[in-house]
Image 1 (cartoon, rainbow, N blue to C red):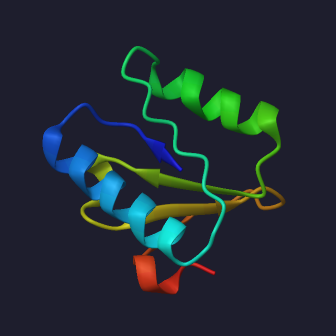
Image 2: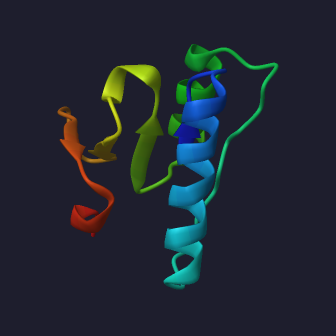
Length: 83
């Protein structure tokens, strides 16, 4: 899961998403590095070979950008719709 914003509102949302997923027993790698650019975070996620990418940002307007590794497209989803 990637937090691509520096705003407190998005940071809070990302932390809530992390807590929900971790509470469900899901293994979540949460990249909240403040010193890294969005491009660095996206590139690192690809290099790690993570099966799914969840992005929380100002652009997603309260939703999550979801992208399976084997797909070229992303979808906006609500947390309850994430597999």
